[in-house]
Length: 373
Ligand SMILES: Cc1ncc(COP(=O)(O)O)c(C=O)c1O
Image 1: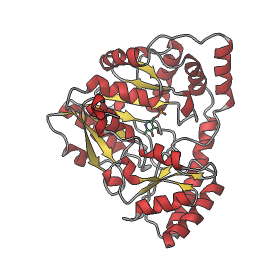
Image 2: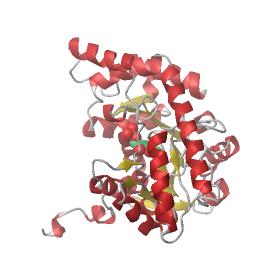
Image 3: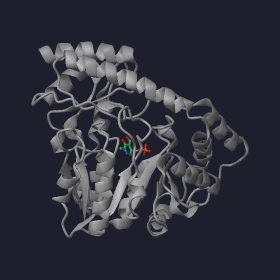
Image 4: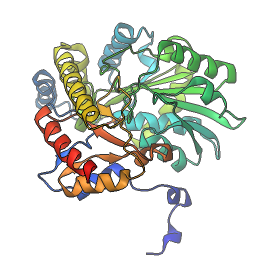
């Protein structure tokens, strides 16, 4: 078809590399490419959603999100993150994805620069470019986290914002408290915005989660129930910031989304207010799998920085990484090539351990075979 009818901005964007992997997989494949927990949504959350439907809570809600949920989120931020917000500082979104979109849309003018981690979550670059901005990849340091001093060297007069993601997809890296403080300081010193994507905050095995919003007002905090409560399909996220930011973001949110799903909002109230036991169980299980996976990789002589959070390992397998990925695929194991997350991901693969130990074990046996040949 005639390509000239399409937006030139879209020409810079490829269909997500991760999706490509999913689509080429057979039904029996062991999927270590997944970016979602392999657990069911806890029962009490499902019940809340069913009640919402039965009670006829099925219409549009307040654009910003129901007050009940925003009040629950105010408490959550205080309890988990030491962040003080009012309900008016929060927008409930359709997943963290929409939160990222409206945050970036509220900031970007043509050719404004947004610094993104390289390798980093795929949406940062794609959304920036679609919005007419310029994504500027900042290489991670050797321990696969973002170094504040390195980030500084990428700031120009065009820089509008930078994105941090701790714990990180795809590396599992967790930024230290000092890093987070430094990032907040950079945002203040240069009067730019720090977008903090905290969707994996509850999956940390070493270190602690620190929200930069405790240090600076130039921070947009993004989170979701997606990963924490195994609710990726419910499409429920949230963004919190100083009301001045929120008022700008609302302008985009009301036109692209109107409001988040009414049913999912009620479910999120139950999730965030409810017992944390299921989350702790998941975290313990992820840690068990991570330890097993790291041991297996080590026994194969594969170099892997120990991931301290999320549910991904990001081992370095060498220049032959694309062949390794396709050989694994042909033998029924899905992993994602590191290059899907930016050019500095070349040579790496992302292995998600959101799968059973049995499957990880099987996949590692196949990998051992693939590596040797
Ligand atoms: C770092 C990161 N941010 C945001 C998202 C999107 O989350 P949601 O499903 O809530 O839109 C993901 C999903 O994989 C992610 O890994």
